[in-house]
Length: 224
Length: 117
Image (cartoon, rainbow over all chains, first blue to last red; front, side, top):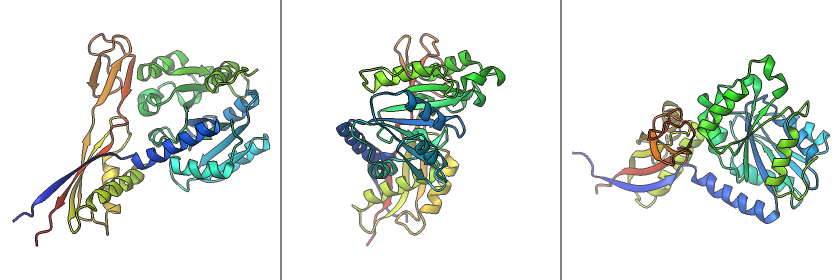
């Protein structure tokens, strides 16, 4: 005879444990006057170079960086060499940062009140999209050599982003990248997406992106 | 590759719910997975089966239901369900659609075998 079964209704989000910490982070960030940016993108799309070039153009507020990588500390060392306070998180094989990692890293980094904090997530277009870190702005970087077809292949990350930065715009013509096609595909997934084409190395488009960012994080003076 | 973290979270939620039923064994864990969550069913089952060993869920099956994608057309405002984010608005044909489907991943319920004494 089959044993009697009872169904226990739960209806709890699988991400709840992370979401609770993310909300605590967000409140803490707000209280400290931080503007926190979660930067997502593939390995090698230019996230670290972009952070350094953006930081160099932002005026008037302290800047700090949380670096996420599977292993190593080359990114944090590079940014420290640029004069930016930076802390490295090693996920040891984990494919994304979570809110608990950010809570610990921010305590150790201890940015000055009012800082603009960049979180460079682990290079990945899949898992990083599913974890709220408590950030105010989610920015996706996609480099031109990766191709203009990525929105169709990784829709989740495009749907969840507020800003899309098309990086390495200076090499677009060499790699057959069609920026209009990418814009059309990305906007069909997320009509509210704010899109900039930038080259952090050459400086193209960086002023437009930095002006937008400065306004978004409540700077009085725009970056130059 | 985040299915291991997802399976861990599912088991934590299931075990917390089962703690109100002492002595009961979890026979089945019922979850829904959001359409844009990028969770692979096979990888999730594999992780669940490895992690459940030695827990109150060791005999549990994982039942996965896929949520459909929710769209809201940016042109005409109609809300609709779709298979893929490449689908157009069924009312006006626009491809500019606000999608949601990553927030739907939930542990819906657990089925427990009541202790027969």
